[in-house]
Image (cartoon, rainbow, N blue to C red; front, side, top):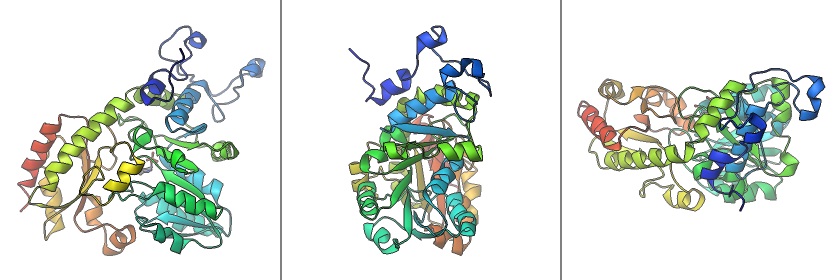
Amino acid sequence: MEKDFTKSENIVTHLGDEYTKFLGAVVPPIFQTSLFTRKEASFGYVYSRVNNPTIEIAEKKIAQLEKGNKAYCFSSGMAAITASLMNSLSAGDHVVCVRSVYMPVRYFIENTLSRYNITGDFVPGERLEDFEAAIKPNTKLIYLESPSSNIFALQDIKAVSELAHSKGIRVAIDNTWATPYFQNPLELGADIVIHSASKYLGGHSDIVGGVLITKDPELASVGSEERFNYGACMDPHQAWLLLRSLRTLPLRMEQHQKNALKVAKFLESHPKVDRVFYPGLESDPGHELGKKQMRGYSGLLGLTLKTDDHTKIVPALKNLKYFEDGPSWGSFESLFNASSSFSDEATKKKFGWPDNLIRLSIGLENGDSLVEDLDNALSFLK
Ligand SMILES: Cc1ncc(COP(=O)(O)O)c(C=O)c1O
């Protein structure tokens, strides 16, 4: 009998761990080396910006989790994202991007790619017609993030990919929110999947990293040249920590989902909460599509609070005991982030954010304790 590497739990625990290669060690070593000598060139390693055995194990596992063929690890999620954009676009090209994308992606398109004569349009993305209307003769890439940042709006990955491919356009998607445990965009037709490994893949708030994955053999080199030339490679120690984290990805995601659903249901019925943005809720506009293209929902959600003065929000949230005020997400600890509620009107409009929007990253604490904590903090919102 062969090990079944179609199952996430088996991939994270066993794929690529070649015990005989590493003196029987159950945890593969960190190859903390920049160089591999020419004397041993037959092993195929050269220089750790190009390849490294520890990083390769992480890449193998993530490629298989995403049902892809090739993965490249980067020094951050943004390094993987910019590699996907630079690989897919040339001077004169156009990109259609989802409006509520992770903010620096939009700024990279607007402020950096524009200097190379690449233009971009930003669409809400909940309807296929949004993309149909934005596509131009020179569109070469559709960039998705489903669910998207802060408002967690979904795009129909299969329908958008079919539309794009009928016009010779590539589709890249940021799958950081759902993780490969809950969603596999390559199976739905996307060409490039990107992750910030700094979130759930890492899961312990101790690494910054990124991954780019493809399935089509013709796209197998996407990311390779960019990593080699721009130099944003992952460090072997980072990759080792990522491997440590991946072993518990399925367990962690189940618990994030369980806690987030409990919190989302509580918030949905709270009198001081206007709306909850979480596709795991049956009331969420993305729920039906979510059921079609995802197997579950992670722990990051948004909510709008009923208040006529947004400056009252942070003082009330400061009463939280388990949730710290912090900008990242996807890790063991719960966090709140109210920064979008302090954005100017133009920024809110640009990204499609409503007033008084708050983001909660639901961690791995006891779910009832998190609900109690939120209930107490909301009582301070007058
Ligand atoms: C949805 C999303 N994608 C990508 C990134 C960028 O990842 P990194 O911080 O690893 O560069 C982030 C970071 O917050 C994010 O929220």
